Length: 323
Image 1: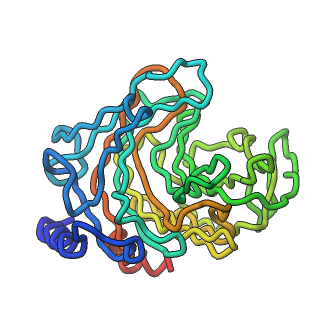
Image 2: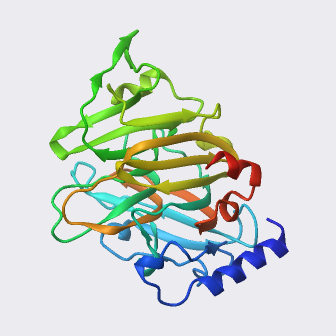
């Protein structure tokens, strides 16, 4: 972004994001943080959440590694859990402030840049770099996965959508790996948790073998791929622009752009509508893994959020594709 444009966006964000805001108008503020100072910008509406899992993480405002501007955010996690423990996780995630969360039935654009530091994990394990979830109230029962997540497994980047369980069909086996017919989406059905996880995008190194974790097919989520895979984690800075509109009744809509190129459009059943869930969606980013070994580091820059595509994607022609 040109310096004057960057300044103008921050100024608008400062005007649009008052110190307190209700959930009803949470979709309206335009948020921006370039992580150029020594702390989170008031214009960004972000914070580092302090809890037991986050004790594995460190957050550093630094200027040596950056995509643009004066600095970028360095987020790292180290081993904290027993490697054999179940249900324990290690995180260094940045959250939106609660008062600025977007209503669950509203669409909003998110943007951020991420750089994978070496070494990039190459093992078969649970790694996430960004996730979108629905608020969970005290009366909710169950474990609710993010309705949209950017994940890493075996060193490969991929994206998933979660929704309430719907009946699917068994995938056809081709050369020992599952395959879904045109118009159908690969999915991992989980009736025991009333959830199903669909595979919607992946990087160019992805193979049919990597898709074995999605052995069924669903017609409840319709994908349109635009000929561009996700960038590989080792490719340098990756800039994401993502439209998030959950719809557990079948009205959901997700758009993923990477480095200005359209990757996938997904429409249909997206998210959860179980009893006790809250009224808002929320976004968090940063390294998150199940109990693991070694240190894992990611750099983030240029966070933005807006109901208007142009503020995030910054390309009128590309925004026209994302409608």
